Image (cartoon, rainbow, N blue to C red; front, side):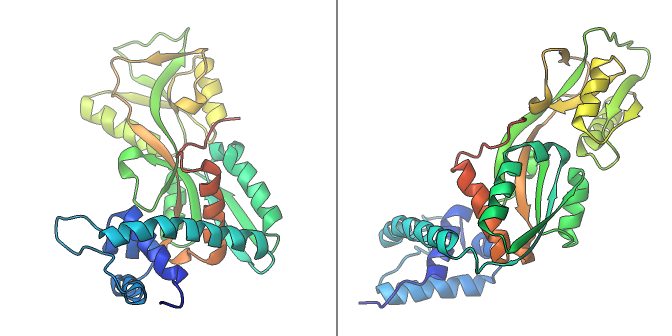
Length: 292
């Protein structure tokens, strides 16, 4: 009988299941493919059975592998719960966190408050900016985690999806658009991917936009739209009954998602702990963000 099942091996097995293969699991765990394969081999040797089917085009797991997955999920959950409950004081470090302005008033803020109480030795340094800026900071390792918006089509296997939404063209009831004149456009700053999409799509369709306001906050954009200064792109979290939805004459807006994305080389124990707290909060529902 095997002496023990290694937690790292079980975690690798779960990553293969969630990511759809060894290569993606290795990327998710920030390990080499050979390291992940070695962990699975150790499990197979300890259990004296084959866990991965290893047949091109076939299922990922053998029957034994599927059975172990069920145990692995429960064991990892208990393992991580025990660490969270008993190992908080031992966990220390600094997390560089980037968030968009609208996520600061969401459930993420509540989680951060609880996280700092649970792990008093972990310092969370938070910076607020637009999603494109956060993405650049993440690439340059200036932040460890970004809570940001992206187009739904750009969701990565490693992303923790908090909320899915879509964009809407909006204006005040009193604003009448003149088809012979440029459309007055209310926009976030130049690092807003809404803005880039609108200008690119408008240009491709021969639609003329004239930027009449740049503002860094959703509240400011919404206020300007309600005042009749122009049209704006807002997501569903920021719609109000006082705004008209524009459904014709303009490019059809795409779907978006709020995600938690971590830098591949920044998956330290504190970073994993914070992402774990967020994941536990959403409870696997992939739905967390609600404007307060």
